[in-house]
Length: 623
Image 1 (tube, helix red, strand yellow):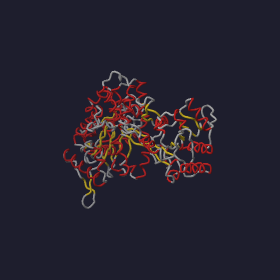
Image 2 (image 1 turned 90 degrees about the horizontal axis):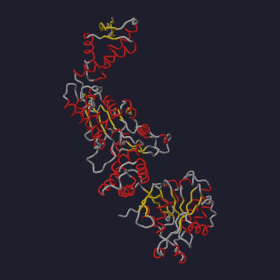
Image 3 (image 1 turned 45 degrees about the horizontal axis):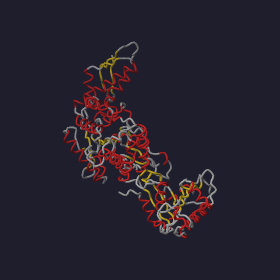
Image 4 (image 1 turned 90 degrees about the vertical axis):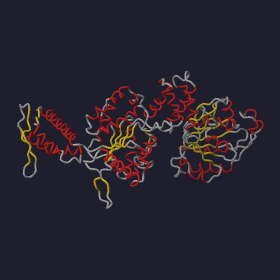
């Protein structure tokens, strides 16, 4: 299989008819390059790869210019240095000769008209030649104008017969007329004046893209011996390694793959653990909590741990744990052909307000990372306007603050192993939702600075109240599910409403498709669960009073009964509604009563009674 880079193939094809080449894009990458034997491949920088190609075409050397060091011959061999120095009268100091834009024009002319040797001029860091490509000063304008004129008047040349004996290629290859080209290396084509390429048919633009799968697979084979156990691996294991390495480095260049290989060599990562090496490179952390034994032990008993904090949501908790187990076993997206780079887990928590959606996200964070505060939360009601997306991802290049990055990308880069909670996702602007497509599918996102953030080790949780209220035929909001509906009815109606929202209202079924079957519907809180929730809140109140005042607060059963009736009369607001009613019925009047009650010297205080005056203001009697 021919893995010669596409830009090299294009350059070789165009050498007879193009005098200058603007090479842009992924120019700082490494490229598959044959060694001198012509059979063995290695990964080499662009200039070495370019030289390998031109040497096979009969070129005898390169002149490389950059704005710092000036001009130097390449390769740095005595024969080449002597020939280049003689032909171009180079005054080398330390292997280089300083050159201004004016003197560089003279060198370009000399290269283009050279008849004694085939050579090329490579202008490196050409993006930095002009401060602003669309606002050139006088010297810059004269330089680029001279370059454009030279591209039009240069002619392809035949090498002189007396130079054939010193050339690297056979005479048959040297007999073809080829240009001595000028090769500009730029980050983006826009870094040069647009008229330089648009107004000259002799200037070819070559764009170097990211390496494709076959190129990455070939690079993986070249790097395989850096991994421990390579010598003992079977051909099948080596082939699987190459395929896995290529799969997991989608979106990375070959230089990144080289870095991964060198890191694996230093840390003695085994051939079969290439995913650990890639993960370490992407997120910058070697220790992967997803592969620790203690996490599997914690998840094995997770049901009891979670249900102690999230009451009455057995079905939702069971499904969440299934997805968590899938994440730990590395089977997320296993149905796809490739390994992919999706997040560890994606969950869409839907259901009534106050039933434990956010609490479950915190509990998962506590379970996996040992601290419920380790989760990253975004209130999506703050992103209702389209322009607010710049806060998440960073402003586009050229806008104020683009170099600061985005809140989301910066947070995940700082904590790659985390739970990311997007609360009330339906309130975000639809254009912002489009950004999640790349996260859910590819597990990565590029911010305004051009930095890529990887979400492959994160759990992403969306919460939503969609489906609880819907619009009727007249456009009024009506309740879609009732507190008396069975869990099956609630789940069916909520899921249908979610599908309608994404498919028809937003016209974004692709987002729903990325979520798949990860929609977890929470049911309403039953009276029995409501009593347990209230008892837990009462216990918190008692503990807080003892912590603040070193007094035991006693709440008799009669008072508890009144509170239960008061706090659970309306269950439509779930656990938050219970907490709000408890604050009005007990905490506020209790604070007033404790403020006036003599606590000094007392070990306990009993809430003797609850009452309301004619204005409906609650009061507490203490004894």
